[in-house]
Length: 349
Image (cartoon, rainbow, N blue to C red; front, side):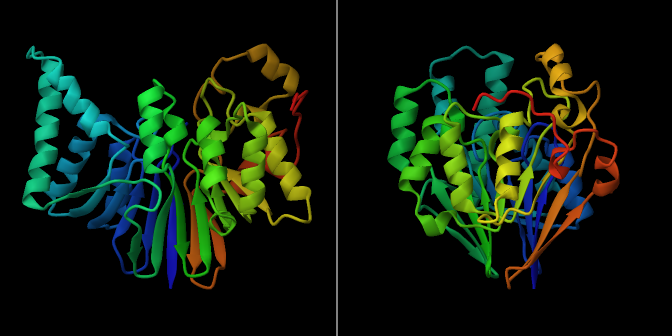
């Protein structure tokens, strides 16, 4: 028996589909609903057992209106979605927005219609809404299990009550297991949320064969905590979902440096890391990157591996499949980080 974890090439964003053999699929984040719909249609999927939206940022979540449009298109063909985990309190905040804006302008009317559609699906039993906080609503079907490791319910409530923004810190962190295979999907965790995860998580929960690197290869201010977490996970492979024309410098040299140090350290298991798209760190020298400043990575998006699929077996063995001829593509990049050909410059870490 096998289970596929597909990391879709959606630019500087996350969209993950888990496809167990002979079972319905699980979707984690959908920043590009049309692309996801095509992917699932091409794979002849007819049922989504659960959708997780890790947090409210647009590189993971298409807005409530966009989500309802995706669900409408999905349901039209007689296909099913059983459960949906929305970002923490996103529905409540949308409902409150309507309450303080009695005027009937087009934008609010669209939002009102969106919330009515969600409630209607809930009433009819077409869709069940679940909370995704630590230890809540674990998923289990046909050998596939998913647990939420972060955020805790009270932590999320405290965060929203005291901090405006910083939704990355309450990203839903998911541990996926399939027999003896384990993956840790770190969404965009950073800052205080990263510290909280390290404090509340248990050593055995962190250990995994695969890690999805957080925040598209950014480097948080508390980079030492990220280093501690990646060491605790001790994965064999790291996946990075990154957009080649992003203006943030992702994947940043500090992150590549950490991955290379783990790869070269015989006390850790990391054997490879792979990106969905090209990064300028792999394409340009350190001096050229300094000249570019915050300009987009490349003039046009360029796929590297493209869609990345990990085919996992219950024994714990896994294989990597890439949409593109990855080895051929990276042979043309002068500073391909995954091959150790780097010019990382002065890191200051």
